[in-house]
Image 1 (cartoon, rainbow, N blue to C red):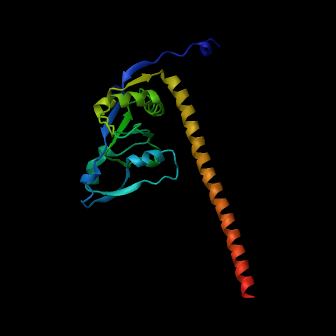
Image 2: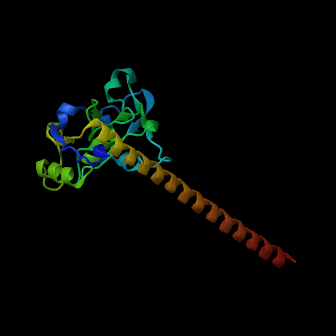
Length: 211
């Protein structure tokens, strides 16, 4: 009982660069003219699909694929766009493991002191977005450097508290994905029912005209 009444411990604050490995994406514009093996790639536009189970990554021919292992993503990595308003982020799902991170993105791989779910939640929050925008360069198109991202302060909670919060985030994400799939299924079923009804009405009308 006394344990449950204890106030949560205040987090310690550490720069992101101490808590995670950061790496820039592979600049594909330098590779497109060369022949190679087709590989799935994560580009800026894909970040919005990280929580969509039906999202399909594009594939690009990458020469000397084996030499680019450092750009391969793992489940639980965080990807962040380095250009544009908001600096969109995504938590890499298991189905994207092995895909290549491309240019204008930075990969963030937690070293174990902060769970990936909490790292993503912090980096995608309003406070961090404001901080990144304040450190960005450019007037029309904001741009943030890898060095600036490594300096972002990150709260580090006790691991037991992290596990509790991460479980909440995992459950929420799973429920959101299931709800999205269910909604799409209802839409497809409804469209098929309507299409079948319309085709039936059209056939009856055509048959009636012929008689």
